[in-house]
Amino acid sequence: DSGVTQTPKHLITATGQRVTLRCSPRSGDLSVYWYQQSLDQGLQFLIQYYNGEERAKGNILERFSAQQFPDLHSELNLSSLELGDSALYFCASSTTASSYNSPLHFGNGTRLTVT
Amino acid sequence: GEDVEQSLFLSVREGDSSVINCTYTDSSSTYLYWYKQEPGAGLQLLTYIFSNMDMKQDQRLTVLLNKKDKHLSLRIADTQTGDSAIYFCHPNSGNTPLVFGKGTRLSVIA
Image (cartoon, rainbow over all chains, first blue to last red; front, side, top):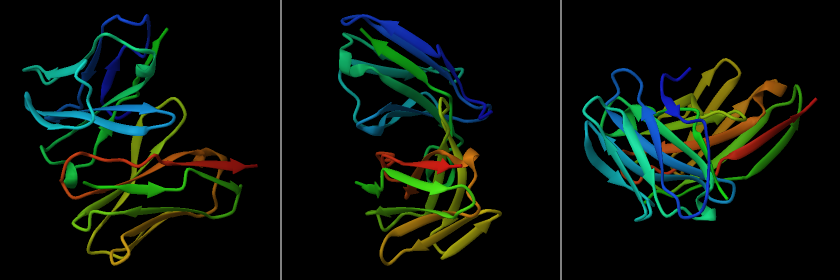
């Protein structure tokens, strides 16, 4: 058990809809990272928050947004959903802002299916 | 930014050794991690090596680092069916974005 909790585990929704994925980081970790995993693209970095502030941005679409709350949990909002957004979405956490000396701890992911 | 390349698939027989290779581009990578993803689960840290080391052994796992060639490998001795998973190489210099490769899917044949 990594200590990172993601909800829900599965989500099925229709095109054009909006969903919110939630992540609770490991106790004591201040950084939260969001990744998207699809079969053809591998693991794509979306965005990182550190102690409530956006720290780094990857290949995140404008239709997607995220935030980290004062209690350090994070939410990833996906809107105007398209079929191609179907994927596994992972949250990871680490203790520091720069993960190079602090490994990432991953949750078990949310599987999003857009129909 | 960082670019990481791994073979997508590897198939080995139970009891044999597995070698998963990784090449990367960021020469300032300080910590080089290997993660394992079992079916239906997230990635879990398997092992890591510091950039000032050439080799690290941890039970059945051996990590080799060739900094000159920017090549990292993971050897699993006496591979078991429970080792079947996707393995991700993750060289990390602290630069963003936080890149992972596509991973190597290891299949162990009984």
